[in-house]
Every structure is written in C-alpha cells, then in structure tokens.
Length: 471
Image (cartoon, rainbow, N blue to C red; front, top):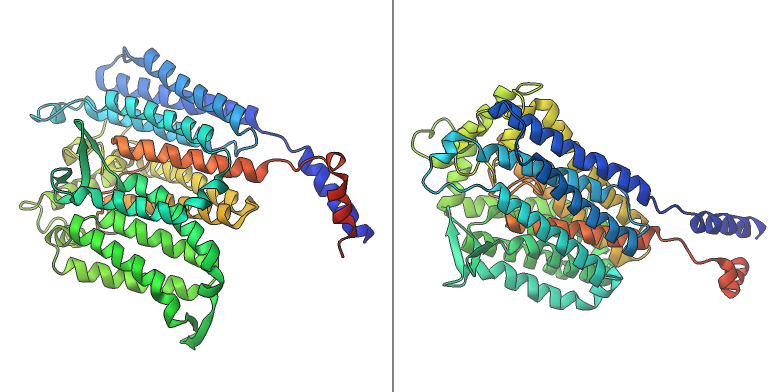
C-alpha cells in the first residue's frame, strides 16, 4: 500500500508541475515563419534576379496569422502539444511560396483561364486560421461531440452527397466533388472527413466489445461474427456509392480507410485490417472495370508514356514523374524547375512534383518528415487522451491525415493511381487548407485536455484518500 501511495503522490506532483511549453511553441513559430520568408526571397532571386517586392507583406502576413494562432492557443489551450501549430504554419507558408512560384511561370500565364492563385490562397489560409480560432473558442471539451454521434453521421453523408445534387454540384475533370455557392467552389468532402470521424469515434466506443468478439478462426485470423460485419459492409457500400456517383476515388479510399484504422484501434483485431484491405481491393477493381474516369487513371498509372499523346491524365503523370527524376538528390533549386509543364494542376494535385524537382529527394524527405511529425503528434495525443472517445477521435483524424498524404504523394510519384486529392496545407485550394486547419485545432484541443495537469490533491483531500485506500 505504501508503494501505491508513493507512486500516486509522485505522479500527481509531476502532473501539477507539468510545463505548458508555450514558449517552445513560440520559438518554433519564429522558424516556421522565417523559413518560408527565406524561401520566398530565394524564388524571387532565382526567377527575376531580385528580391520580391511583396516579401515584407508576405512575412508580416504569415507572422500575424501565426501570432494570432499562438495567442489563442496560449489563452485557450495552454497545455496543448507545442509542435502542431508550428508544423502546420511551416507547411502552409511553404505552400504559399510554391504556389506563388508557379504563378510566375510564363507557360501557365499564357493559358487563357490563368489567374494568380497565391493571393486567394493567402486569403484561404487566413480563413483557415479563423476557423482554427473558432474551433478552440467553441469546443471547450472535445467530449461534447460524443453527444452528436448519429447527427454527425447524417451531416457527413449530406456533405458527401451534395456534389451530386443537380444545379449545385460541379463536374471538374470527370469528378463530381465540388459544389458552387455564391461564386465560390467548395469541396465538401474535406469537411466531411472530420465530421464522419466524430460518428466513427462515438459508434466504435459503444460497439467495440461486440466487434472485438471472434466466432471462428480461419487461416490464422480471428474472424468476427457475421452480424458484426454489418457496419464495415455498410461503410464499404457507401464508399463505393461515392466512387460510382461522384467518380471520387480519393474520398472513397479516405472514408473507408479511416474507418478500418479506427476499427482496428478499437478492437485490436488484425482480421479487420485484412478484411478491410480485401474489400477495398475488390471495390476498386469492380468500379475500375466500368467507370471510365477511374479506368483512365489506372491506365495512366500502369504506363503513362503509352498513352502520353492521347490522354491528359497520362501527360500529367508522365510530366510529374519526369519532374521527380530531373530533381535528383538535391534538386534544381527553388524557382529553377520546369514542373509547370504539368499544366493547370501543377499548383494543386501535382504541387508535390514541384517540391521533388526543385528541392530533390532531400526536400521530398523533409516534407514527408514534417507530415510524419504531425501524424506522430496526433497518435501521441491519442495515447495520452484519458477518455476512449478522445483516443479514437485523435486516431481517426491522424489516420485520415496520413491516408491523404499517402494517396497524394503515391499518386504523383506513380506508386498508386492518381486520386485527385490535394496535399494538405501545400496545394492550392481553399477547402483543403481551411478543413485541415480545423483538424489541427481539434487535435490541439484533445492534446490540451490530455496534457492538462491534475488538480492539486490539497484542493480535494477526499480524492487523495480514495486513491490511498484503494486496494
């Protein structure tokens, strides 16, 4: 008993004295702003031989956005993870630099529909920070979201189905993933991935014991009971419907993959992973056999140079692969590549090819490491969370983020078929950057709750006595 008492006393004291790490976050934010500003100057010198005239404004703007985010976190989430905000700021800032670099391309400027994307992206980044602030203000405790488990399911399905509504949805290059509202194009699937994670977390927290039961063993795997396969079959069917009606391979993969990841974490059954992989493979093969849009991307993936002269998808993939190849180990240098040959999607779906060409393999690995750090901090937040809903929610958001990185990077490198998704924080697109700032805000809220010190035992002696006498 004395050992338990001592252990509890030590852990409590350690929790009470836990540092907030906000000064560490501030120091990291200085570097997260300085690095993109330096890169911006480097691009201007490479392209025009002079420092860009907007350098000061860009530095001040990015610094103000980062400063607002830091002050809000310091006030509303003082014990949150100190790495999440600087990492997101750095990626967002570098994304603005690469988008501006492609705006300077003479090839792209000759396209009739060309318009600079960097100013809009800066505006979207500001909107993302604003939503980040709203999340921290409105969401005082992430566990409140558990009350809206089934409402979130309905909301997510409505968002996913909006692009197929006549007069509202827009068909962009074969995929119906956009809606047009008031002159703005919105990709509702980016927001649906966050909302559906609320439903998955609440549902699996209640049903995880039933889903963990195994009725038989087959080839070394514990298979779940037949009636417990219902949820995964339903999610599989919904993801297939999204793919069929919207030709959206990326969202379908993200939607289904996130559920399988959370299902595995909740039940600790490897059989769910195997079943999920088999079902996703079967669904992809089935849809690719009759969906021309998906089939074209598969053909471009198998041999982009066989259909290079006849298919736009093959031309894009071929140019992307050549961009990575010409970058080598250290790259051609910022502003000195030719990734604009990819065309209109160079600053959105294929912006990672610009990173590969101008920063080389070293730059690609650096960016993947930054993304991996966000994912690692999200998983660490899940491990530290004190409630099962928070654990599953953090894992779901981190898993969705990781899946998006994989399918985008794998697509532009030719590892897997292109999905049409965008690189978080890096690519041009308002929906993506705004939704991912909301995702970071939720992870910061969960991490603040998880890392917040326990109350002093002096303020609640009864609780301390309860801990001491517990056998």
